[in-house]
Image (cartoon, one colour):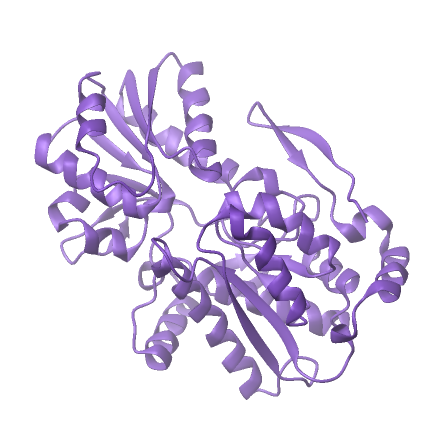
Length: 390
């Protein structure tokens, strides 16, 4: 069944919004439709199968594996306490390599495994392709994409573009920069973030120049030199961390003190510091969320302790969000009394004040997005950790 679509405006930009399945059909009708088309794997017996879609191999594998471990921890804890609806939960890992060409194959793997829900995908360029397909196949998405193009396609507990952009704009305004040069990966999320900041700065009279960054190059010294030649008051880097680390390295080598540098959220990962020198990592500040160990609150501290004990590894940025995603999903299933697509999606939409490791979680039923998100300006400290500046 095709889902109806529409446009609305967020921060002056047209954003595509697709109403959630249960809202579109109405709860009773949705339940009857799903009951008639749901596969046998949705039956109320046997294990509950949850897919975890993430870049488990490739350049972004550190993020993807952290995401998978976050769900694994939630599942282990749930199963140790009797499961969900009295049934064990099992995971099927789905590796999309951050590649939109693999987006449809990822759904096919989840369907074949009998998954009733998916946590992920992470990359917006993947999600814009396959989230509508997950919905069509009646697999409930608790996604990790930040682009507002995926509003209404399941729910998410992590920040969306329109929630991150104001923090970046406020930082650049406070810096007093009158000209900004952007180094931009033209993928869905990173380009979208650059465009939002671009529009906000231009509206305030700031001159903006964009320079494209192709993924996977050995270094970006030439692009950094091109950016510095514009004599900007600030350099903004909207890439994922493998490219961002190389850009920071080039900046530190050629311009160690000025201009100011702001890295976008997709660079916030322990691997950034590992792949750049500490000095290079400290050359810039970052928009985004801190690693789990720097997240405030007792529940975050407990998550970190349990994660370390279970995996003998340090948690990154996104595993704590997938941990919350899984627990929000399990709670919705318990409240629905089933794993039915329409019933679970409706309960997810109604999530209110869920006490997560990332803070309280309330979902906006119109967009499926979290209402209040933890977004900060961060820096790298002497220990190589991302810590909150403001």
